[in-house]
Amino acid sequence: MKILENLLPYNQESEIETSKICWFYDETSDLIELDLETFEKTLHRLIIPENNIDERICICQLPGNKLFCYGNTIGWADFSGITFIFNENYEVQVLPTGTPSLGCCGTYYKDCVYVFGGEFAERFNIDKWRWEKLIKLPSRTRWYSSTFLNDILLVTGYDWDKIFALDLFTLSFSSCPISLLWYETKFLCNFEDSAYLIDYPGKIFESGKNDPFNWNLIGNFAGSEQGGIIGRKALYNKAWYFLTGDSEIIKFDLEEKKIIRINLPLTY
Image (cartoon, rainbow, N blue to C red; front, side):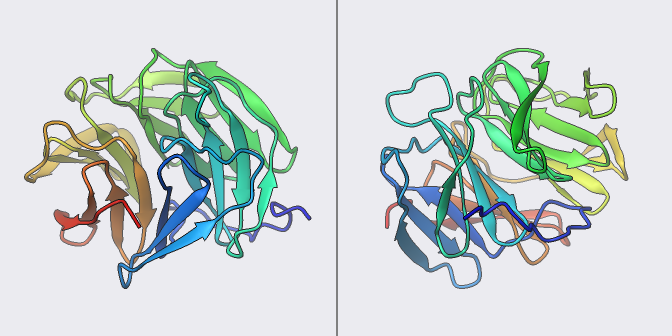
């Protein structure tokens, strides 16, 4: 069985919408799934070769209610211990493993999963069933976050004070004119023709329409000095949901452009 076969055609303007957000529990293969409509949790035990999954593993939404997982297992300090995908029936398929990726993130765009982590940007080409190393990252960081706008991939990280734009035609990085804080948790996302950055200390930035090089501060909220590091996100019903390490969900309402904080223990 190949779970990645016959992915649904996807006319992609925004990241893929889903009504659930998932994370691995307590360094195991137990997956907690949160329903974003009811906020009820369900526990699933995945059958995978490696049972000890690091909470920092990248989980990326694919078309057809499939999830791509890439990153660390316990005991692998600085490179991908496992890469796999699972579907809505929680059937697992192990994939080829990529290269170094501590605290990585992933974004699905045009039949590829783009992964930022360690020292490199890579993509898993679903049609060719292989990893392709793209370019060395501008510098090394932790707890990456990424999204896209047109054919530009946007990425930032905990140790960076800016957003970098990866042009998929030239495979080159440019720095976006935006000033952020070092050593803070940041979340990138998009919707229709704009990208957004949630700076966890309490700021909301919006890009120009189809313009990743024009950013404006559009709001503030009561953030946190430390922030969370889990970094799960989900787009649902015109809102983005971000799971942090502070036992809460951050909801970003895309119509009102405001943040709502929801208390949520990470345990089951």
